[in-house]
Amino acid sequence: MSKKVRHVAVFLLIILAIFGSIEISSYNYERKSAVKKLYPVPSMYQRVLIIAPHPDDETLAAGGLIQDTLKYGGEVKVVVMTNGDSFKRAVIENYNTIKPTPHDFLRLGYERQRETISVLKYLGVKEENIIFLGYPDKGLVLLWWKNFERTLESAGTKKTHSPYINSYSKGTEHKGENVLKDLKSIIKEYNPTLVVYPHPNELHPDHWATNSFVKYTLYTLKKDQIPQFLYIVHRTDWPLPLGKHPHLNLNPPKPLLKTGTEWHLYPLSEEEVEKKGKAIIMYKTQMKVMKDFLLAFDRKTELYGFYRNGTLRKYNKNLNFEEYKIILDPERDNLRDYENGSVDITAVYGYVKTNILTTAIKCRNNAKKEYEYNLNAILFKDHSEIGRINVRFKNGKISSSEGKGYIKNGIVYISIPVDKDFDAIYLSTFTTSGKSLIDKTAWRLLEKEK
Image (cartoon, rainbow, N blue to C red):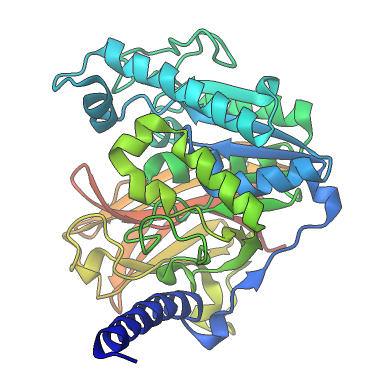
């Protein structure tokens, strides 16, 4: 063997070793956190409902699952929450303008709809099974809470109602309560055997808000026991490596391995991987701005998680504090003020004592009273909403006129009276500075201990 050939062989071995190490390190983060292979039973394939925050999310997350469902004689319905029409960079790149107008954003929305229809028909989905709700891109998180009953103006189209002629509810106002009406109507009519939607630890606000809307809908319809596959599209530095790597698994983000989710890899055949890759390329407006990111989802597996409901315990002096833990949150995932451990939530605890609800927020470092610690919650009775909680702790005080807040052993405690007889609570905590979000936990549904 010549010296030149030996050098080439050594170089190729190094490349293979690098890619092998990437695969191993991303799959076996810890031996106790094994990722299981997922093989759904045939009954799940009967009526699959996939809910996407934006056009293309349904294919990135479930392009292979769609093919399997149709192959085994099932039906697929896709609901797209927004038309992705407030993506300024996409407008600039696709329409060669540096000052996009509302008309440009509307144009992008319609074009992304057309791309989705073409892609899903290519994958085998009937056009009548593709539903566009038409709510504002980058606005779902506001509709979930602040604008649940108040109308929201779209950041892109500048409209307060859906301007799309093909929206599920034509001319619907941009309100969270209308999102729930649409989802309830669709789910009741379709009666899915499997629901596929974003994970609550998604980084993109439209994605985690979609999770909250769907979870709320399933619970209030008493359909929370339907099998649910939760997918991830947006997390910091994920998926890696970027670009097309069909021989790699789509492994879970390492920070999410210890946050209460049971992760599964869904295997795809070589033919399914190839077809999914061709489908992704058909999203031309997005390929211009994030090609390598999109292609990173064309792998030999798709990733789905199960995030179970928890329990809100009654206070018991004999229990250890850790037994009241209700939410685990990744460390060092602040959206800003990145190194500040006093606002980096790592765990949430909760319990009820008579009519007092106590929530404890633990951060990576000791909490400080000059920062803002927040609790949002929805109370349920017999699967119906009966009240909401919105409390902020700052400077040693809580925003509620009743109850109290304090810091003990570096942990923030918020205790408030609840005069409603609830049997379940859906909650999340978050840290803020002024109007800026720093860190937030997943929303989690908790059944109250009887």
